[in-house]
Length: 510
Ligand SMILES: [Zn+2]
Image (cartoon, rainbow, N blue to C red; front, side, top):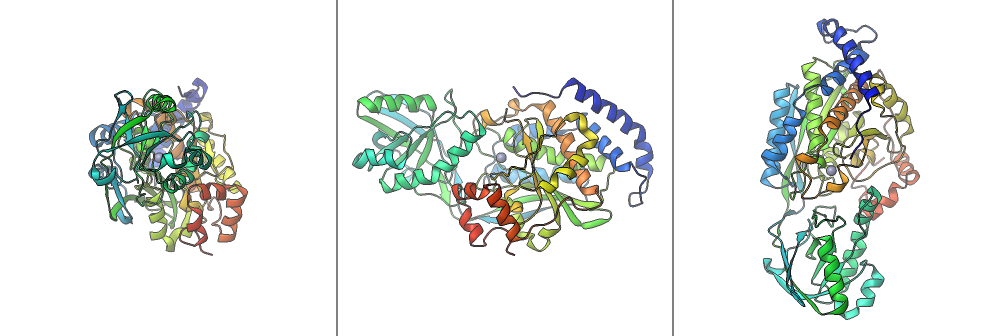
């Protein structure tokens, strides 16, 4: 269970809210564009926190998104409905403008009714879920073939199998996922695993689920939006273990049916809403989360709750009549699950004004408590974050880290030189439900989501209100150094993003 806010913290915030409520009439009565008395910014931060900790429609929005629309992979009708729904929510909030931005994804993929069955030496049904971005079984029909156990799926393991792998369904075993490091390891294994499997001429690949209790999840095998030719599925952990034991002693035959639908390029849309700044409208503070999700669950933790948070922060600014010094953009990206394609498209589309983005703030770890922020290699952001969050010091989100992460929508901003922050959150309840059937409304910690929204609102306000930008825009040489210093270059190589950076397809050019 995730930790919740301490009683002391709640008391501090309650005091702050009472104080803010006392001052609110004075503040709200001021003309919006007029110079404000010292302390007005802090009072506004208190008001925002108070509102978010109260009874905003954040959880109602999340319920509509998860239960009413459901799992929403980019390219699905559900994702299109979610985009229209989000536009409607921002409009209802009353922000200055709302629009969508189309971009192209190179290949479409939609999961079907996946089935597998062990045929020999004993018959039993096997739970499987096709891996996104991988081909269906040939002809869209079931495939029957011998199953062989390729252990950890390393090059050496395939070498030991020799010719037995050719034309077979190959089973690869996985360690159980206990930490976020295990999650990253699962992704970095994919490229060499696919290469070894294709060299060996396998017919299909079954990868053991890293989650116990027969839980299935979507595990994309590539992060470029292209369709990979080898039919691949995640197989329930306990079923995989049984198949492996059987295969060690007997000939095992399996029927596998992965009727995924694949297609060519298609158009997806990001949602952008904006509150124009009163003094520096050309300078932009961006808060973002991703609206798309996988489809086995309903994308509550990943990342519906934070999409609802972004909408809620916009609504609170409007409801309180707060017009920040800088422009605030509230962006709900799609294509994140295909490899952060929506945020990459945003950065390309806004190349001419990307250096006016003074900070990008992303949230993508569900409703786990925000303990601080990833500074993503930018030490200069530490103080501005502390200053912005001073108004909600009782919430104790001070555990900032210089560490940089690759794996959500801040990434293309980072390599484009934009100062960027990612909420550093406790990993539960996100991690045990990652991309899984169990990522549904019920697992979200609603009280914590509200506290996170309070922190997010206050941070955005502080960044938009401070006299100077929180940090400078970086040149290519500075980004290159940051990538090396934070070892993000190694992650980029592991995730297949490094070549695009070197070739100048992604990231700042000078
Ligand atoms: Zn996510």
